[in-house]
Image (cartoon, rainbow, N blue to C red; front, side):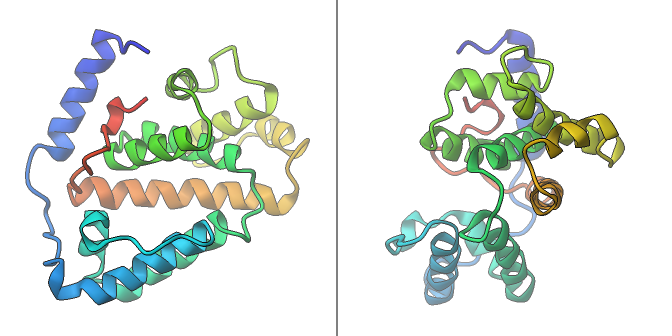
Length: 213
């Protein structure tokens, strides 16, 4: 999928803004916190996808070595992630990824968007679908439910509230618990965009940020 020169220019400008300077909070030395970070990483990965093998120290994302400075807060954030993205999650994986990616794009969050494009691609999303998520709910190829998920994210971003029309459309497939979970999921990833962008979190080697497809 070819990115237009206009979008490419805006991506480059946003990357300079968010990523063009060193992180505001440096990660801890890996060896000094190895045991703590490996345990936390395993809890997070195993909580979201069961039976994950331990990750080698040098493969663990840098975010884990930054947020380990604040273990109480970090573990509570991980608890929420496990609850709404792990075995207890009630939303379908595709709905979750649609919501997360649209949130990451609207927040212009390079780390968040790029990481979740990689996850979405592994889950079966195509580059064309990612491109459509960037376009949003107005893209004609979505079915009515997918369009409502994307539109809910857009309405929350613009007005901090889902409209009656979108709520009614979502309710045709989602029960009350799933509707609430969707709202919390979007809120979690807005908060994640806030701290990742503001801390100038560096991209991992396989993360293309807002250019990911």
